[in-house]
Image (cartoon, rainbow, N blue to C red; front, side, top):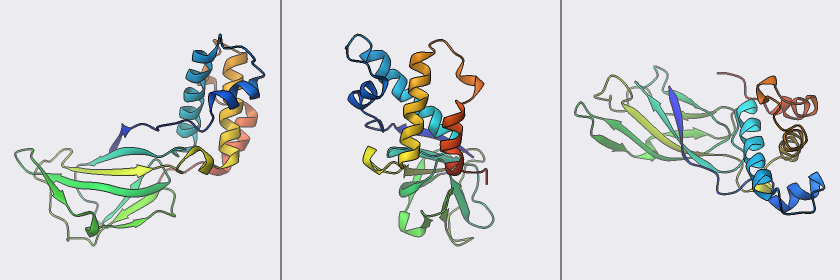
Length: 186
C-alpha cells in the first residue's frame, strides 16, 4: 500500500505573525525564511507522529482488497472518504460508491471497511485500487495545542541553529510533546 498527497494543507498551524512573536523577530527581513521553516516544522511533526495537522487530501493505492475488508489509513486522523475506484484490465478507472464503505474515524490509524467479497476486484494486478481521503484535524484552531507547540519549538530550533541537520531527530522538548500523539505502525 502506498499513499500520496493530492491536496496540501491550505494553511499552517502557526501563522507568520504568531511565529515571529514566538521567535521575537520584529523585522520583515526573514519572513520568507520563517514561512518556509513553519512548513518544514509542520511536516516534521506530521512525519514523526504519522498525523496530518491541517486538513489535506491523500490517495491510498492498493493492489488488492484485504481479506478482512479493512484498510488502515495513514496519516491520521481520517475525516472522510472522498472517492473510491478500481481500475479495470485496460487501466480505466471505475468508481465505487463511497456508501459501500464504513469509516472508523476515531481509530488511529483510521479504518475504511467493507464487507469481504462485496467489492469488485481490480483488473490490474498492481495499483488497481485508489481511495481518496481527507485527513487532518481541520483548521489551525483545531490542532491540539501540544502539536502546535511542537511546531513552534522545531521552528525555533531551525531558526536559531541554521544549518543543523534535521536527521538528528527532534529536539528533546519536541519529542516529549509529540510522544503521546505518535501513531504506531499497524
